[in-house]
Length: 261
Image 1 (cartoon, one colour):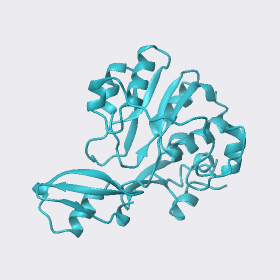
Image 2 (cartoon, one colour):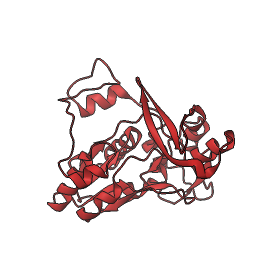
Image 3 (cartoon, helix red, strand yellow):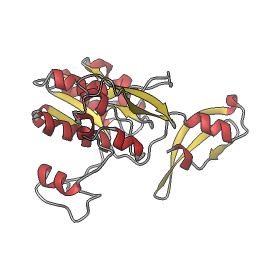
């Protein structure tokens, strides 16, 4: 039976944590490798059930199957997919807007849904500095705390806690803010475990490359700069290309980030 090792051997792991969440014998741990957390299997505990492999979003994506199952038709462009309508939205809440990086709509929406008790909780990412652990999506139940999880984080996020929660609380309605690989893993899980798809409000984010966790280490290693010159890391759109750059006290320095994605 295939295991998650097939994914790691091919370099296709997206560091989502779904494999560890579904392992019935807790045979999977994380190994920090090349800037991301990849799964490592304890062969003595592994029972070769293949559950880890079955939910893995990195090993393959069957676009035809996904569109047939979750939409009315197969789109002419698989990358654009099917859409009902498109809008540009900004929150009316000025406090949320000032603390947001992309208009604050998602924060306002989740805050409202939790306040009205329409959903049990939301799994959101709150990340400050690397502490040697994966960046887990955390469960939030208090609508007043949603603002603490606002703004974009350009790092690999881990949905292990979210998957474990919905597996042990199958009737609860949950909001999840996910990138495409997370969504793919969740849809596989819903089908495999026969979960009720209507219980999960999936807010999907566009994903265009992701910084590895050791981004700053690579930058500092390859550049002669003083640490106290760095103010913050930002993202800048140059035509159609989004570049990551470091804002410094004396200049904006654009750097090539191929090594960091």
